[in-house]
Image 1: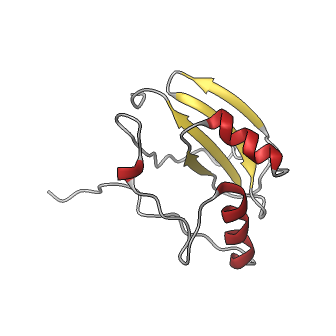
Image 2 (image 1 turned 60 degrees about the vertical axis):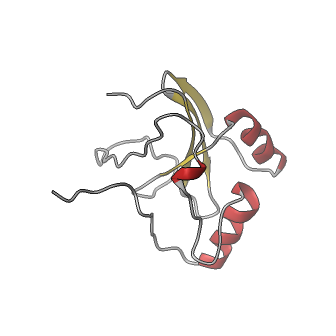
Length: 125
């Protein structure tokens, strides 16, 4: 039987796509003509994975953003990445460590919450 093999992309509407792409390029170092392009072959962690995870409508996990979604981006060195973001004036909303990785949260220029994640270990089951 055929099956889904992974996340193909995240597509969303914004008032000024060029401004948003410029923000992602300047602050996160990702972008291109069609947006950011990630290759699993570039991932250095063992057993890399992505999640598609629905949340209850009442969740406050995406706050302070009003958006109905949040973007999770994998990073290779969260501590160093956070120092770079702070130097660029990006506010860090918080950080947290779990058995499966370290996390931090920021807002992009459109108020979309971004979760930065440095994976540690295999996927939780």
